[in-house]
Structure formats: structure tokens, C-alpha cells
Length: 353
Ligand SMILES: Cc1cc2nc3c(=O)[nH]c(=O)nc-3n(C[C@H](O)[C@H](O)[C@H](O)COP(=O)(O)OP(=O)(O)OC[C@H]3O[C@@H](n4cnc5c(N)ncnc54)[C@H](O)[C@@H]3O)c2cc1C
Image (cartoon, rainbow, N blue to C red; front, top):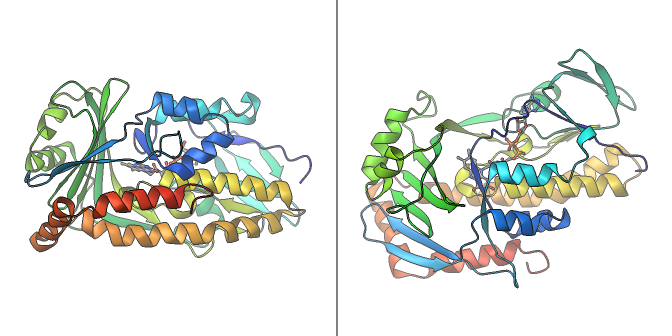
């Protein structure tokens, strides 16, 4: 579509997000490559090839290797602020309007009127809701919230990265809990997910985190003692929609299909959505046609991640002793995880799948 000129509103200029890091797979890295920031993001993040798997019982403690994609790393964990910084530099400054949100959206025959919190009303050819799991665009434009609370609490915090913080990217599994520890640029990042009694349990507290970390043992309690920044805590919420487009409104990323963070795929899905939508808008002669193409191109990938996550989540956050023993047995006695990791990286590498 000729003359397409995007404008982006953002509620806050602060680099605050639902978690302080993101693990990116080859599909997400490929989009960063198209934007010319892949190398920079990899330089700023942790691209260590070693991935250590441990169980709280100590029965499993093994290191597997992330395969590279050609000469490039197949996986990077990056600080959100660095990722945002790198991405923002690809957008002309005048296209981003900070401190603004949408109050109302009205679709007309050929345009969409958007009322902003500044009091202005503007009309656009197309509105894209890239506003995360609690999307205002989704609430304003679709029939329902499509927001499902999940019985999982998550915490994320920075800590000192000196010993006993592990050097490798480390995943520690305990009863109904998984913690990931990553060193990024001299700082230690800890992400914890644990099953709650129910999705109605009150918001995950710092006290609850302390208990969870003490149950996990190993270096985990020390990481909290040596915390260096604020504590992020939240309930996991998922978004499941039949369709995340309508005539001139499109949702991308978590606004369209937030998945359980245990999948580690939300950010890559968001990047791929954005690229596909931009490509469809570029190639189509009408906005509704572009959005239809965008939805068709993305639906299968999104559903596949949703399905895989539903299978993976009970296994990774296993509560029952029997399931944990099975998981630990698989981790310690078979190369299944390494095989699955290699398979995932191959499947997510463009031109390799
Ligand atoms: C603890 C945790 C760990 C995770 N780990 C990983 C991981 O390792 N790998 C991975 O791929 N994914 C991970 N995820 C998921 C990942 O964070 C999300 O899938 C990803 O951030 C989605 O990107 P998004 O741009 O759609 O939404 P967001 O990153 O949530 O961005 C939405 C943006 O919209 C802005 N906004 C919100 N409302 C408004 C409004 N009304 N008006 C204007 N602006 C607004 C927000 O300020 C924000 O900047 C994790 C999530 C959590 C909670």
C-alpha cells in the first residue's frame, strides 16, 4: 500500500515490561536480522551455548549445548531495556508518541477514528494493537476480553552475578516450580514460575517467593538475599482468540495470543507477527485484504506454540511425585531434551524447517 506511514503510541517512556529479560529463538533473531539489530542484540545478551539443567533434589545436574545456526548463535537471552533500545533506534523518533493511550476506537467505512488520552482524535487506515496481554485495543474493539487467568505465579528480579550464581544459563526444576538463572552483562537474572492453588489465589508476594526459593534450595535463597533491583511479580494470563483481526484492526503479540511464559516463545511470536503484518500491508491493495492475509499466515504457528505449551507446562511445572520422577528420569537418563532442543532450533530456523 503506497504512502503507508505508521505512528506508534506508548503508555510510558519508561522501559518497564512484564519481565526483565527475553529468551529469543532463531525465528525472533531472524526478524532482528531484517531490522539490522541482530548482531547488536546478541552482543548485549547472553549467547552462551551451555544450558544447564538441574533438579532441586540434585539428582539431575547436566549441561547440554545450544546448537548454533550456521555461524550465528541459535539462542540469546537479552535484557528488555537493551532490546527496546535497539528496536527504538530503527523507528524514526517523530513516529513514536510517548505518554499517550487510546480511549476510544471507532471504525468507519474507510478509516478508523482513534480518540487519544491527550483529547485529540485522529483517523488512520489501520490500527494495530501491540499493547500486550491487557490490551486496550482488544478490549475496545473485540466482543470479549479473551483473558484467561492461569494458576501460575511468576517473579523476576536482578541479583549479583558473582558465585554462587551459575556461569551457564541454568534451569532448576522443583515441585510445581521452575527457575531460570542467566548472567547478562555482569548481572544475574532470576525468573521463577510456580503453580498456585488456583487462578484466584492472591497476587504472588515476596514472602511466597522466599518460601518457593527455600524449597528449591541450592543457590536460590542466596539470589534473593543479593537482589539488586525491584521485584516483578504477576499472575500468568493467557489470551486465546479465534481471530485477532477485524476489518481495519489487527492485534499482534501478547495482545492477540499471550502464551504461558514457560514456552519462552512470546517475544519471537510478537516479532514474527509484526514482520508478517508489515509485509502483508506492503503487498496488499486493501487493508482488510492485508489483515486477512496476516491472520492466515500466522495462525498455524501461533496454534502450534499454544498446543506445545499446553503439553509442556504440566511436565515442566510437575507437581505430582510420579510425574517429577518421570521428568527427572528423562532428564538424567536420555538425550531427549537435547534432541528436542536441537529439533526446536532447526524448526525455528528460516529455510531449515
Ligand atoms: C516472567 C516472564 C518471562 C518471560 N520470558 C520469556 C522468554 O524468555 N522468551 C519469550 O519469548 N517470551 C517471554 N515472556 C513473554 C514475553 O514477555 C511476551 O510474550 C512479549 O513481551 C510480548 O510482547 P508484546 O510486545 O506483545 O507485549 P509487551 O512486551 O507486554 O509490550 C506491550 C507494550 O504496550 C504498552 N502498552 C500497554 N498498554 C498500553 C496502552 N493502553 N496504550 C499504549 N501503550 C500500552 C506497554 O507499556 C508495553 O510497552 C515472558 C513473560 C514473563 C511474564
